[in-house]
Length: 315
Image (cartoon, rainbow, N blue to C red; front, side, top):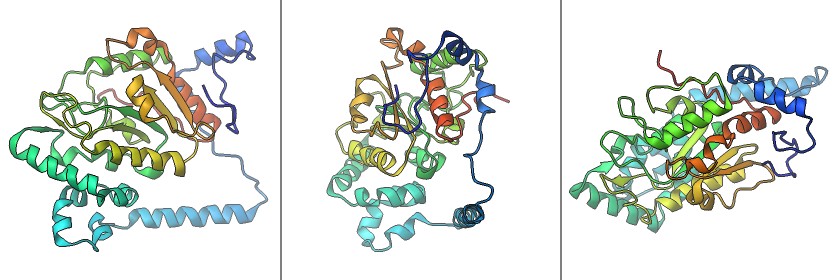
């Protein structure tokens, strides 16, 4: 439930002050109609200064986004040895996230992590494949984040993990936790079409950051790379969103995610908590948690575009 200090309070079914008829109307809102509700923040038509400034800002953003920025340029001051150690980050991490996380990438803990991973790769099979470890940085840039979903570590089965928590590559059986996520969405929106695959990249492209606490795992060995350093890096990513953004929805499912997000500023973000969607716990409230509808209501109430969750069905 949204903190009372937010400037634009979120109305939801648990608000005691709402009338029964209003609650009924909220429940009847379809996913499609909610997505069509998007409207830009009100502006003063007579304030030409604001309008002209907005136009200039838009042009500047467009200009910057069209520039080809090489992540390697951010690390030109490093020694050749350090560049070799960070080759994966320099070649596969998106520039925007590399800029945010650069201070972490040169710290001793991260260098130790890279040494550990080099040894693991020489002896074991690691998931996701190296080019996919930082795929989340390309699909959801820091400036685009609207929703954050926190996972624990990647799936450890063949061809499953591809860089987003709870998501699997197409052609792979939908994992039980993701099946429950789909069920929860269906409870929120009658018109949600449950896809036959588990690839959530289309959500990521809309600003849903699906971030695992650890970014790699040994094949067939859950949690095998926890405590090796990834936690510090992903903490830094979450800290950046918490401090530099406003009106972001954090979905914290299970005790692990809730501990990871314990420092989220509830005065400027919406924090939603529930049990984990795993079959072992989903029946204890996850399926009816209403997080997806609450997230969109909050985004709309704060002049942000809601997420079209209903975009996964194959063409």
